[in-house]
Image (cartoon, rainbow, N blue to C red; front, side, top):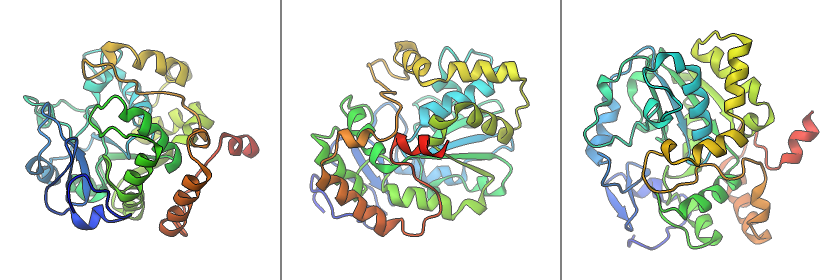
Length: 310
């Protein structure tokens, strides 16, 4: 496959066990796709080393496919652990809960004090094997793929650790072929779900967070063993409403980079209807039905579906 040529759907995972550049912004390795970055130790050697990354019983890992609620859930988790951090999580939650695969040059995650919190977009087959001892806690958040694609398109315009998509057709091609950060979405979600019994894991959906934010905060708190008062929970819920989050995360001191990056845009369900043509939507539906047949986790495609469930 020549660099710059969009492969057929489902081919990235089969073709990229070895390192391969995918243009200027991405590289493929071991069935996954990563951003090219000169600010991080993001190399095949570092990715290989993560298999043996030593896990502590008190570790908490958040895994997601990009644009599936990572930053939102990260904020909830860091606030639940606020008393454990010497530096306020309001100063920089990215430092309190860094991305495992995005090791900044000069940093060493192995010496972080406990409890250690990590985010990651890694597929299941690439994560530290020590997580299978089921003592550390794993949270996996998924989102309907059409909204993931639209969110990914808008985020790509900042060209921050991703390839910039020219238009919606471009992002659909990239997504269905697995040529995007995180790799193939279908492999990502299925890999984590079908291997769930290996881990001490909590599955959540982005749509669930929108539907009942307080319930999700309580669910995460119980899972990680944080027994907080109702007042403390209420305070966290107030800080993690989408409206408050959008203001906070659009402030420069919350960003891990100096450039302006909009992490949160609309925070809704079904925005894909404003982006896709009927033909594009049907193309995605066809692949989704082929790849996700009999998959047990529910998917919410429109905000109206939540209203019907009340």
